[in-house]
Length: 379
Image (cartoon, rainbow, N blue to C red; front, side, top):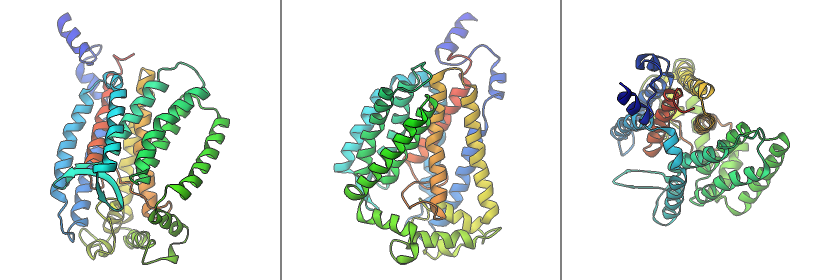
């Protein structure tokens, strides 16, 4: 019996309570919501790609199936072991970002994707995990109540290098996602409010510098049309205008599956990726949108519960960092669809078509669930 107990503990499997009792207390809302949204996403991808040259449904089916395996892998991995590999994972991500600047596939004006035969992914997705792991390992190792200035500068440096490399692709959305990760973990580590004020001022200065030196012409046009879309309704303002039409025309119950005019008549660009939410709103209406947003809310709430009952500091930081990435994706992508924020390539977790991002979402879901399962061991 002791040998069995020792083996279980060495694998990161708690042996302090009966296994069935531990499974009953897990945050099952995480995998349930992930699978439910992914199923809805398959119907959206099918509808959005009916009039495209390529039917993306079979590919997304493969990604979801592999994603379920990735979720199982994330659950099996002990996050303590994964954090020990944070630096090598970060280094691999940086090398991949540098390589893609020279060898990446260009699509939509950005060289951010690499693949063969239509299947591939974005190294920026690996970098999201790497940045979270490094920041968790660094900030989560301290027992101080307040985040010191030197620690904050190191944390800023951790995200600055990949953010610059991603922005050079240029992929402004991918670079932007790293900011809320730093904000969430720095706040959790005890960031002072005066430092927050200085950080906001620095962000304004960096934004002005990016406008002058980094942003491409099409990115500037997107920001201009965000404030005045009517100035270029057939150019830079076309996409958001068609998205608003799709969302509004869905009304209460939607037009029905495969009945959306904006998607089926090809008015809405990027409808299977960045604007999948608009297709959902047009076909399923307000009721469908509320149902999917409810699933996202349940997912995030389940993640918050995992963080609140985790037994070690680094586990709490890890869950919060991963939830920060997912939350930003959800908030920005939905807000972008209805014109609340400028358009940039930020897909919806589990819903939008995508390879590496779908795998990333399922993997981190398993990882968060694994943290919950091991809360009786990693103290």
